[in-house]
Length: 336
Image (cartoon, rainbow, N blue to C red):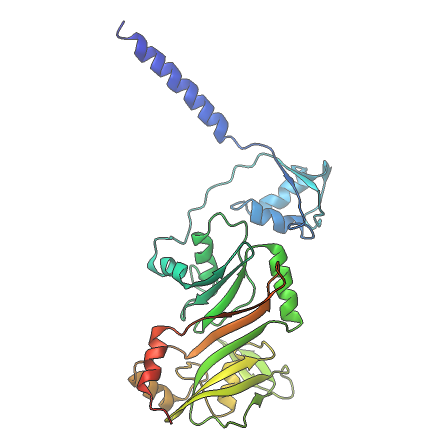
């Protein structure tokens, strides 16, 4: 009698194991395309939806007819339409371990840097020294860290970029429609970004515009340097306003009308007023002085951004406070 319960328990465990195996088996998936996902290529949609499946494997599944739209075979370049029904054959996705841990101190701190968030957008105060995305020897950047913090988000994509050493307002889209909306605003110059920079010397009040054309040069080392080239360069414009004068330095507000690489930094340099601690375009003596006062990073900060919200159509202004190290430096400078 004492053995009967053991036999029953064993049979129960066997049934549970079989059910578990059944549940673990990949199944046919059906996805109906809504307005949010329409208009994009099916291969791009699948790469985001079936995370962990290599692109080459998706192409092979399309060729074999394992992935169909409205019961028909399609090519990887097919553009999805509203109410299309995707049939995706069973695919076993190898689970990739996250290269970014939410336990990492730098990632955990990002949560406190979020300035605004809703179902369409995240605006974050990007720290200096953090690249916006991984690559070029970096295991991860800000966008990968945000994806680790928001694992349930269907998509998170950068709307624009900031240099690695620049801090401040960075916008991330949570929906494809929001990304399209904001990219159109950037194209039509409806987005306004204002930066604060501490520059060398006495910036003249009358110097409100710098319009030197800029050209990118890639060095043999792989480093990218931007130079002034009014013949072959791209038209560029930055507008400036003096915010505060200090002995030997000026805090200016910069508004880039165009969005060229390193634009503000090079326009400051060519005007004879390099930004403090700029490793590429800085002034050695000025940087040494600022370093002695405790500055350890580029003093360029995306202080605010203005745009039209993609859902409410309201004009928004979001501001990012200076990090404490920059505020502390300013208190050490003597005002004029």
